[in-house]
Length: 197
Image (cartoon, rainbow, N blue to C red):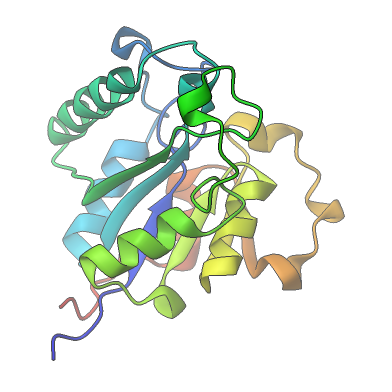
C-alpha cells in the first residue's frame, strides 16, 4: 500500500494572490510577494500543495464557473515561471443564499466545512493528520481543523483585520500567526525535505 503524503493546503485569495474581492478576471491576478518562491520550496521538499478556495462570486452571478478555471490556469502559469506548481485546485462555487439557483446550496465543500480538503485527500492520497492549512480567515482555520490538519493564520489579505487574541487556538489547531506564507513556512521549517510518497 502506498503511504499517504502530507500536504500544505492554501487558501487562494489573500495567501497566494492578492485579494481583489470576487476575482473573476485573470488579468487581475497578482501574486503575494514571496508566495511563488515559497511554493517552489514546498514542492522541492516533497509536500503536496493544494489550493482550497471559496468562490461564491459564481453563486452570486458575478462571473461564470469557467472564469474560476481561467484564473487557476493563469495562476498556474505564473507559478511555473517561478519553478512552482499546485498539485490540485479545489474550489466551492456554492452559497446557501445564491442569486444563481443552480449554485444555491448549503454544501459540504464551502469553508468552514472541510469538504474540499477531504476530497483532495481522497483523490491524492493525503495524510490529513500530518498536513497544514494556511489561510487568512477564521473559516480557513476551521476547515483545516475539521479535516484534522494543523493550521496557520497569515496576516496578508483579510488576515490583517483578524484579531488573533480572539481565536480559540485549541479548537482551530492554530500553531502559528505569521506575517505571510513565506514567514509561515520559514518559521515552521516546512521547506526541509520530507519523506514523500
